[in-house]
Length: 110
Length: 114
Image (cartoon, rainbow over all chains, first blue to last red; front, side):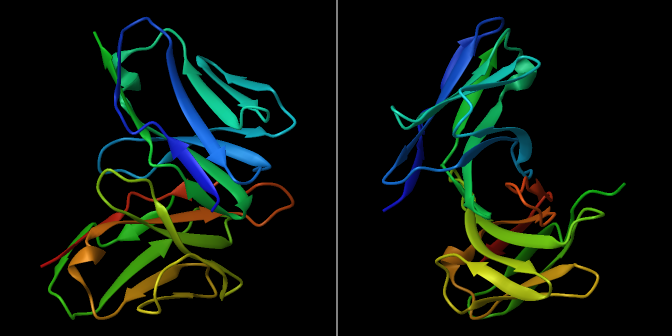
């Protein structure tokens, strides 16, 4: 079956380092992938969208890549800050509604 | 400009009861989607409404039903509640267009079934 998978283990990094989160998809090829940030008890907030024909997308300290060979998207936060601590969700909008991964919790230590 | 709003914020019900959750979309949006998010999991798509009709449905039983009104607001109804229905219910709105629909989420309704 079609799946979006994210590393369910929390990622702990030091402030100022680059955080890299992974999103893998299996058994299909999404045309778009979206990344969202979710804080505890709140709804997800849209961050970036990348199309399958785009290798990379940037927005301020954020960067997303899309590798159709590896069937993978990477989400990078450079110069990370404690305020970046949250759960990050990868979602596919191939069929209008979003299919999300389970999310990866990022903890940035001061 | 108000974003997506949901009511109520929290709700406690007992097994077998019925519940109605409400959502008002972001101004200018015409499409509403509902998601269920269990603790520690990603949101699971329930269904989507556009032009007052259910356009797409996820893998949820018929106990989950919805409605969209002419002003684009929406309701999610869950009948015969089960303990497993306890979750954060998220509403997301978007605008029907030619490209991928970025979704704007509300704060959610936390439902606890006892």
